[in-house]
Length: 310
Figure 1: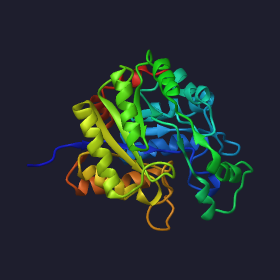
Figure 2: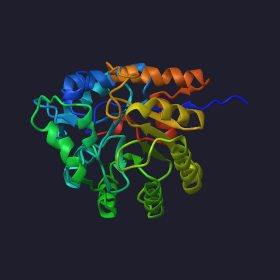
Figure 3: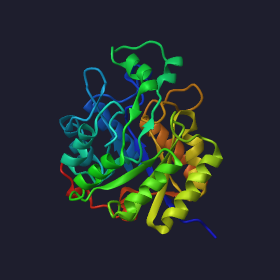
């Protein structure tokens, strides 16, 4: 029997893991972020996941005014679903991280399901020349940094955004995070259908072996049944292999320069769209269809682009 599933491609355009000196193609300014998001949508992404950066030095920022510089432009040019981070950067407090989703009321926002070590310091083994003063200590100090997401923090974000109609990309970096998601589902703070994004390959979270992927999927299926949609992101070189496994076994996928700078061994991706096109080729080679933004809105029961705050 043919598999008629439609696979949602999320593209994470720019994030808080990489610094500007690591790739000349990492979007930093509002113009670059808007163009990257629109390009990813044109390539086949149904959802774009968005962070903001200070234009003067590329430092991650949760200033809602920076988001306002690119969100309306993306919305005017594309019907892609816009997904805002509440993760921000591990160095930020929860109140700061919350503001874009709280004020701008997006259709989707990301939400991390647990406090964790979040080690970026190993990137110093691969990158040595930095343009801005903040980059090296930001990476180096991550061996003594905890990405805080307590039960109280998670509840606070969910409750603060409850009147916005925003749904969440539930980010799970380990098996225990799935059980935390189940806890908040039982409390009624997360409502079905919810979108589980399993994250593989970041230091401090679960690894990238295919058995890690399968364990995440089996556990989520057992906990959530038909109440959820599953997606994956693999960090760095694991991005496309893990996305391929997910697509093959019934899941959705996330790519983008937030998670990986690469478009093949030793080759920097020149755009987010290049990564979307690569995974789209894989999905279509599996005789699957990519979901449109309208498909994603229906699958996730989103409130629609006309009901956001920008």
